[in-house]
Length: 252
Figure 1 (cartoon, one colour):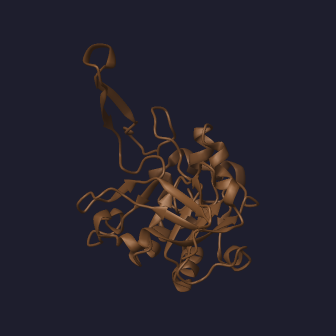
Figure 2 (figure 1 turned 90 degrees about the horizontal axis):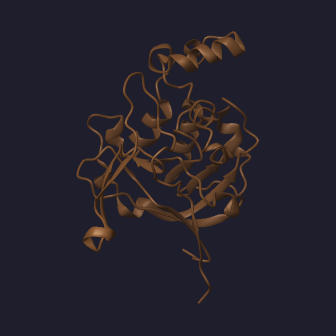
Figure 3 (figure 1 turned 30 degrees about the vertical axis):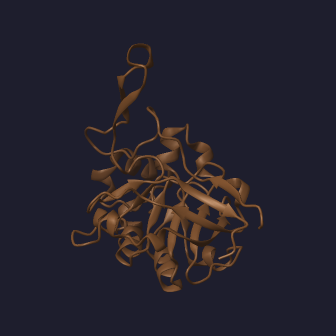
């Protein structure tokens, strides 16, 4: 039997990691120890956070009121052959579109899991840059993936969609709206008028989407591997943290 090699593609979960920003109160990761080795001879902790924290999978119900919950995503959709594509050439705020997928190596095939390495996982500790500047999808790129018939999608960035694809940006992320106008002289709401189109297109077509991919992704970039990413069995949940693993040497 061929030796299998396993690679962790997930970011850590701990207090003080980047979280998606909203106007108003944000939900940070809070971990409280309830039992202590020093006193109780064992440890047990209570964990508070959104399911959309660190590396996680979005369910259709996240953006579609009648969509399937995370428990309804078929287990077969969470495992399969995939490609890890190098798109580290994409820079701040650049959109990943059909032309990028057409020239991707390895070639993207129907039924593939597609993991995009933008290099943004290296900016994990720079919270503002990581969340507000990563290159991401918009409508056209998501349409290409749907038409290709991929099985699942993951990206080394804060969300499936570009950070600019959250119209009305001036109300949802006003600090980013102001920064973009200041740097470019353009109105992001005119250039990207849709709210999270990639979420709606991918999840609406039952294509699982994973945000905040990271870990050892550089080691298998440019390769065809097996991808495994199983969410929690949360009944009609809108998403779940996942441990994404790439496996080399498993011929499916």
